[in-house]
Image (cartoon, rainbow, N blue to C red; front, side):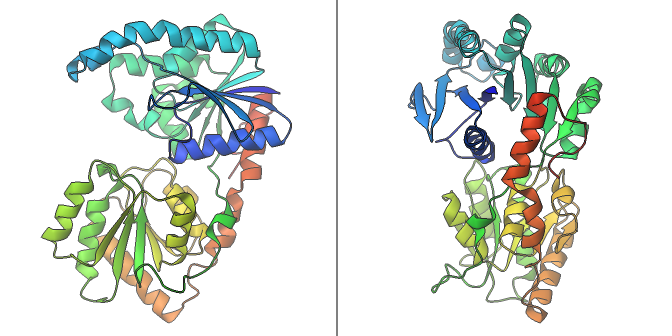
Length: 388
């Protein structure tokens, strides 16, 4: 098959979406498919065209004029959009005409959606729209045009995939017709990235770990307050937080306010192998999200053989089904503190607690994910969860 992948962002930019689409492109190519990637050129310092791991990657500035740009005080972006909109549209149309794909797969229904919708109405090509999280959950914060565009895109799509059943249900609230052509494909994890090992000199010992973008919806402030509640009971315990984002400074201030100086370690954004090491050296992995489309951090914690403490937000119950984990309501710091306490007490009595999670994580392999996407591309999906 000839497959055109259209992710909203792609490596070397880091993130969950970027990891999934890059690995998907690599695995599809390894299976003999011809793959081309067209994505956003953001940041602009990125090359407009290059080959990454044998996959051709092309970038353009997918901008179009929006009043929101003016409201945000960015008249420069608004004016630039008038110039870049026809260029990006021409680039997409030219690539489809030149490449002649059997399927076009848009990953994340965001800024590229208008371009894809126009192209899909000009070319008779199978269109698969893959939803990843904020492209659905963020619609309430968007404009009327954003919601119209989302519905129009899903109506035009030949197939719609999402990384969780939860997200498919959310999408169907906006466009009920999605139910006739949706397929759930869970994200995947590479078990070998989380080999059970311990450093000769642990980074901080002992500690529980949380990771993700430092944004309000991730609930790290709730975690800090829960950790403060149990800190006196576990005086040697530390909390390690991986990631970066707009809430970083506020979270540091919260640490000081709670008297947790020296007990909370912010490691920033780390390479994937470093995240794996931090997880395997931890006591437990905590996912305090207020909103979570899938729960990749929870899955990675399972792959590391760790017990998980998480909320019931979004797709997390799907990921943690049958796992050695404790689930609490989102935003409930008392329940989160209790779950942390019980997890640490269980670990003290049974150091093997959580190791069974590694076996469960094997259900989320890359082979199953790629096979699921290929079946959707070919139109052979039978509307079942293809990668559960």
